[in-house]
Length: 401
Picture 1 (cartoon, one colour):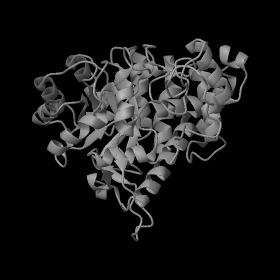
Picture 2: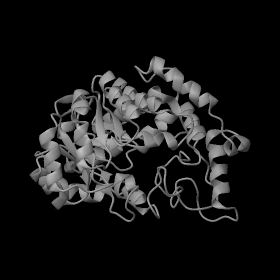
Picture 3: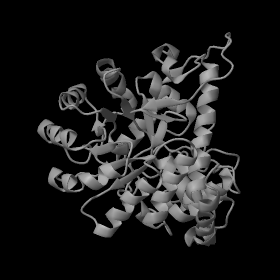
Picture 4: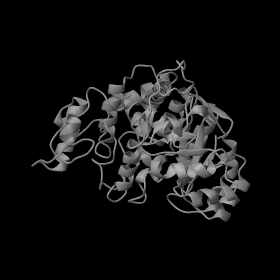
């Protein structure tokens, strides 16, 4: 099954740096080739890429609010891609294969940290996982729905925690539009959006971000970026009042001790999930702290260079924790088959980051709904072709080893 971002208008192979957008060697410099590849991919002209406008993208984002309910409104995948390129370039080129190569070394934004190898390792580790087709059976339709923390969702994929800083990655996206797109778009697809926040930001911004979760009846997870516990605890009544699916706490951007985790678990009524676990012993410490769940993540490769890919470390962690607490993971989830792979490796739910970001920039809430619905359709097809009737039946037996 092709990625949501792969289509007939993908950039043609050009000489240049090897990676998702470029191939082999060239006399041209890297930036020129990247710009050229984006022109071919979007079907635009060079002047538009050199000085992209945001009018059409802003109009699409405004339209999306009125028909976010189905993801089947006026936008098409190609339009979402075109709008995303206009608004995100040069932070993100919206390559047909998002492997972290073309943006390696960029720093900041959504590229990988340092050399970008952690981002690339997430991608390559997942690509090495192979599934076994099983096609002599009577499972003709698969049920992609699952439940996490008592909440039923249409597929085991939710928006990864992303904060207001994402509005600086592109053009023409306010915080209100950003979080409305993430939460509204995912909710319309029957799953959970996300609101990531730094509670040391502007007071009114923090209150407004919390209100997004409340306004969509808690159909989102709430994520606290790395700040001292005392600040998080000051906001505990407001966070709990949103009815968020769970509180996600980043440790992949700043560690917390077992004692600090216990303090948060004790204070909050909602489940507390620790995101940024890459070792079995850290996972066990989280269980000792009483957390409700863990998220295997290296922050999309955006914090520490040269880490292992999440698909490499997930099986060992799942071997210890499967069935004890829900296990989430992220790392280059682009298709329904990617979801199937991560679940076969031991995850219960995956989190989708960069591709949801592009969908939001390319089509607002409707773009996000379109993408999440595409993931669900792809996952259902992949389950049927591996002989799996339901999410609970996915295990390592469908993998080729």
